[in-house]
Image 1 (cartoon, rainbow, N blue to C red):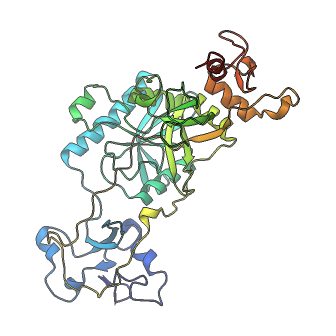
Image 2 (image 1 turned 180 degrees about the vertical axis):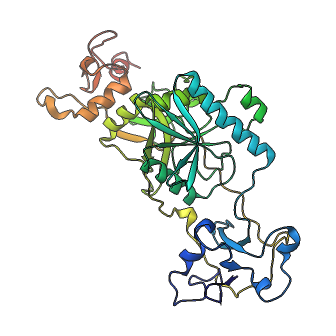
Image 3 (image 1 turned 90 degrees about the horizontal axis):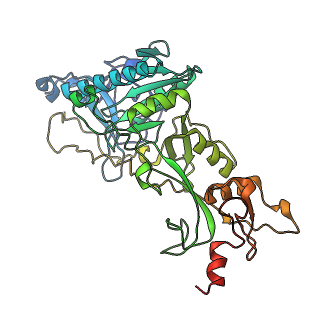
Amino acid sequence: MWHTGYGIEINLSLPDLGHPGRPELLGEITARVTDRDPQLLECLAHHKGRECQSETGGKSPWMFIRRGRVGGRRPLVASHLPVTHKPTPAESAQHKATKERVVETAAKYGLDSEAEVPVANRRSVTDAVVTGPSGLRIGWEIQYHHLSPSSVHRRSANAVEHGITPLWVAKDRTASLIDRAPWARVDDMPWKDIADGKEMVIRGGYRHLEVWKCVPSSDRHCLVSEGAGHCGAIHADWFVPALCVPEKKPVYIEDLVLQSATGESVPVYVPSRGNGRAGRHMWVSADDRTLWEEIVGERTPLPLASADEDDDVITFAEQEIDRTCRAGEEDWFVSDTRPIRDLGQTTGGITLPRMPVQGSRDPMRITPVERAAASAALGCPTWELGPCAGCGQLMRRYGRYAAMYCRVCRAVLNGR
């Protein structure tokens, strides 16, 4: 492409774009079109007086930069304006119906709500803001078409800066907003069904915390042992309602409108144990978040900075510049299908040491974190915990359903 400001050719396949003396060039050309001159970048064929295919297709010779996705690579690709996505009539109707449903639901519950709320000096508009009794503000962003990760981060950060908790709504499991901000996924429904009040189940983005003792009698598999083994430790992980044991009731969009505004449901960010730069955003009950923070011993704030993720790092093929306009040519540059981001799987969870042993000589060796985890795993208050008379591990020793020996020791004593 041609840079009209500097009067230079730009080769997007080179790390320095063909101009090693201009380190700022990449940032300039990848800026949003609204933040720069729309005619800054020109189709090179058009500039040279050759045929520009876009002109016959109803687009302009002015260009913008996007990131492609081919075989795991993320090359820069020049595309003709207009930059903004133009929703289809069906997308627009879905968007409007969902926004109106959020606002109407808020009104039904006696909550203050407002549609099309300007944020950050009117540079962005939140679809709907619902305000709870305590002043908690939830910014609903209905996003039924593709939006770049950087836009999700930027708009979420703007919302938080202005005292609004963002809540993004998607209908596609490949949506780039998933796990980049607090989110919820609903079914791809006709706008008429949305407007008529048909059930809108939250299919992704809302989870429940499950804590269990890893023993043979457990209904869940071990998180650390291969095969069907059991490690005797306490595991904690997050599950969608359908995968909870027993299965939890589904969460509907009306539930989330009310509970997010009242603080009964809250956003939480769980960093990936294998990759510190990645993690899961989810909506959870306030009680679950409190228990999780006790178990992990920390509270992880929602990330606001837009750090490059592994699948967003630009790659450069280092080829000769192509001076031919390729707009409209089939198979010239086909991006791979966007990967599924809402996998509906567990988050990786956390494993505490084997159920702590309550030694009579040192009763203080059990930490508050271990005691809280044991209480959750066994489903009893902390004051009902006590040592197994056989192995010394914490168990439900006092109160209702109390016993002297844990299940494992009872099995051993009974010869099983």
